[in-house]
Amino acid sequence: MEEKKRYTAEELVEFKEIILQKLEKAKQDFDILKKTITHSESNDTEDTSPTFKVLEEGAATLSKEEAGRLAQRQQKFIQHLQAALIRIENKTYGVCRETGKLISKERLRAVPHATLSIEAKKNQR
Image 1 (spheres, rainbow, N blue to C red):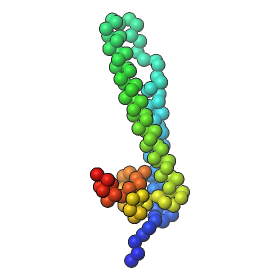
Image 2 (cartoon, one colour):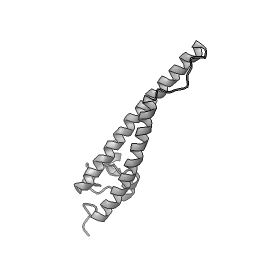
Image 3 (cartoon, rainbow, N blue to C red):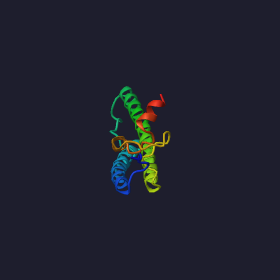
Image 4 (tube, rainbow, N blue to C red):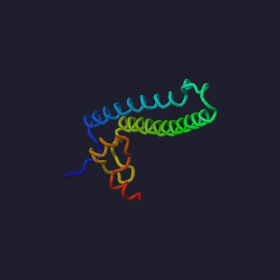
């Protein structure tokens, strides 16, 4: 029996639904992170001691930096999901970019934006 080279239209629809769900959640998370970064209404420290105020501002800065890093990571994840949708439209979704073989369904369900099979990923190390 000949090895399958591409997923069927029905299979691609299943993957598209998974990706769209993950994309919706990722965008919601990204919006929350953006609001965290730009949020200026914090608990006011006007009436507290100067030492506490410095510590409070330092913690807020650290929190915003962490939120910024998370937001960047989330944005990258969204871009990967959007690229996966393009691959679905082009009917190239699920094909390993290294081996040219199909990436397992299990892997794609877990990591729907994957472009490498587990075999190719192991060979990268």
